[in-house]
Amino acid sequence: MEINELKEWLRIDGNDEDATLTGLISSSEILIKQSTGVDPEDVEADTNAQDLYKLLQKIIIADLYENRLGASKINPIIVSLYAQLEAYKLKKE
Image (cartoon, rainbow, N blue to C red; front, side, top):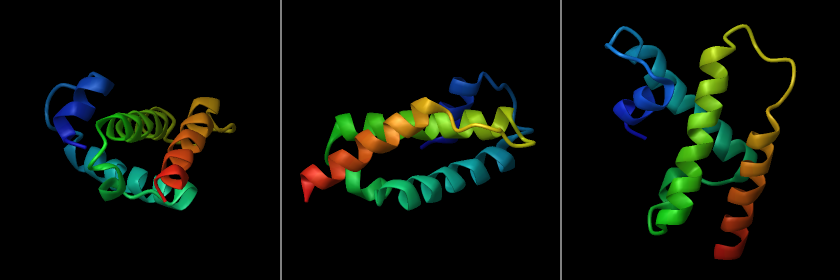
């Protein structure tokens, strides 16, 4: 995911948060991989899967960015998107 795409999603102007956002992008990839087994490279050939992956990244990052002290509950949308992305990978195999 490109940082400018993420900044638009989060409605962030300027570059003050770039290091934080870059770290969150990397962290979201790790979280997705650990939860679904899907790497960004796994969805490169399928634009629908890419869109799903990016949406999941955006929601994870927004949640982490806005709740820096940690959320008490897992966002149900994240759980649903994990399941959909995991199903994509299983179907592909």
